[in-house]
Image (cartoon, rainbow, N blue to C red):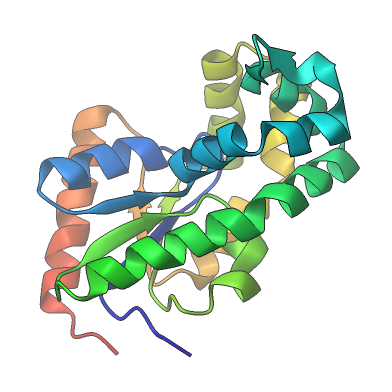
Length: 201
């Protein structure tokens, strides 16, 4: 099996701050493969497949209305599995294709996969994992604010994923995102210092 030895997966939980960390890393010149961005691209490519499963109620002007689709699948685990079955194989292939190209440069790059641990069997090519961490109550609070959701709705979204404490326990690296943005920048720099001095295995 092809191993991507220069890659580090970034994961965590909804609301943990992965996007902010990716922006900080990109600002320092690192290449980022963004699984969410790829998912949005694939969603636009397979509108008819998604609409066939979920109906025209998830469409707006012939495109997928992500807010409507999200409200549907994040309240029904079975529907979420259907969506993943449609999109995930295509997302995975695109991630692996982009990673293969970046490997040839011989430099560290990052792959933002929000559900890495939930789908670990599909990503055995990646061996190093960074978890962006915040405690569950903080995650729920952030999701409530960002997505304008009730406490119960935000809690459901957080709990659709493997518990953040379990993820932190098995990660190779952790960035704590429990303070303000300046603190996150400091934690990210500490992480970069760690990987620059730590030999790859």
